[in-house]
Length: 271
Image (cartoon, rainbow, N blue to C red; front, side):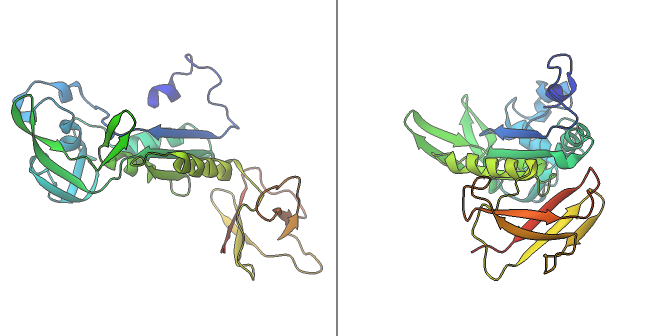
């Protein structure tokens, strides 16, 4: 991901100042971003040269996995997160920081992942190449026309997504039909890009919170009365612009244009 964002010469124009940026991951394995080539060392103290090193050194757990040696022991690990002090695996927060720095306004970024459930995270023993080794237990098996697809826990990936509150979507890969996850990610993209149409039936009486968000300050906007006193909000029927749901559209009545960085949000109780 960093290479795609930093190598401007390979893809000029990919990052545009005023454009939204979406990063979507589709994977049945967890992140294993090596900080050092030592991760691939044949040194036996690191354990077998397998993907389990990504978990052993890249994840830390409050219960059963506070150290790499504890992570190497069989059993369930609880309350886990990306290991911020690992010498071998990069902390996922560094990637979130790099992604946010790619845009002047981080609100123009959204991330999503169709990944394995982050829990349960269980270490088990398995016979690999004639040797008993520790490995990460799969979180699901999905039967497909071509056989069985397996997924590992996406713990580090989920922690990356968590760095983008209100701008991220976690979807489970442990299902045969990904139509619903893709639809939900599309809804997230529409929200970030901006959509004034009301896409779901609202509960009556209306129970909504509308705010102007400049990135540093949130200012509530009251509903319009009679007469309308700006700034205020109201719903109007616009069949052409909003062909779905009840054809309702949010309209903000203003006396003057808001600051250029302003994003208006609306949260309502739905039926």
